[in-house]
Image (cartoon, rainbow, N blue to C red; front, side, top):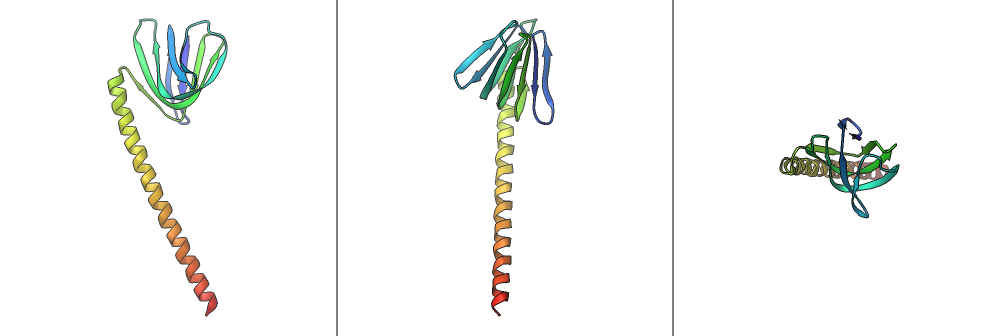
Length: 133
């Protein structure tokens, strides 16, 4: 089986020779093996895991996305963000760092939005006061 996990800016995973894959959607955890029927589902934010031909387990945390199975041998996942790791501990560290960065970006965006709104209100107030005089 072949696995391709993509984000809007990169191909996060491209692996061949998979023996199995495990993912989660709204109905719960499910597994896919070679020969699986064509399938499409919306993934929850979760960790996708798979085993290769050498029985090595790999992981990829996805922040939601769409999983498709085509021809019983190609699994494709499109997601906004993907974090790949060989063990769950290292993956947890990456997720924690990514969440902190996202929190900081949201905070900066909120601050910029408040500044823009305040400037617009000041400009409107100046315009209205100048129009009365």
